[in-house]
Image 1 (cartoon, rainbow, N blue to C red):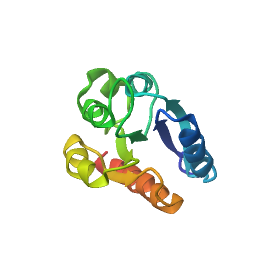
Image 2: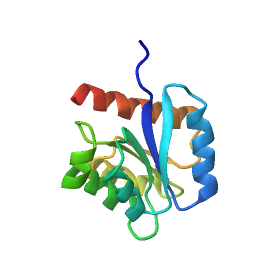
Image 3: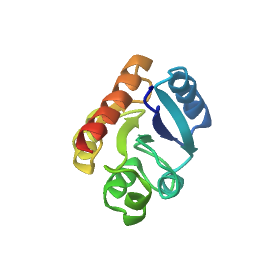
Image 4: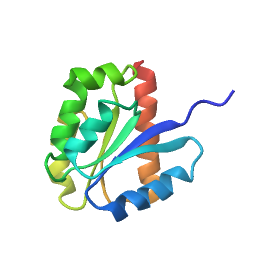
Length: 138
């Protein structure tokens, strides 16, 4: 029996960025993009209604930044009700200033912090590692 694919949320203001990630991720049978969000508030709304294993979240989004979304994922009671235990894991991404987001991202609960334009294999590995750490925690 084949394991269910890792369910991924993509949260980024740029629709072309989300589409590029979707093409990369959906090309792999062990991963599935189940939702997209153009800002942090919509990302949280998705997480409050749809099970997601790993969220790829831009550190700098309109209405609510990625660090705040990452912190909320771990503490929001409605998200915890919807998500299978343990809670959704986060891969935080940024276009610039990676060093500025590594420590705060980890403190907020992100499993990885990457540049948005990281090689596809690096993004895929980060998603898979986050999903694996989620599985170990359950």
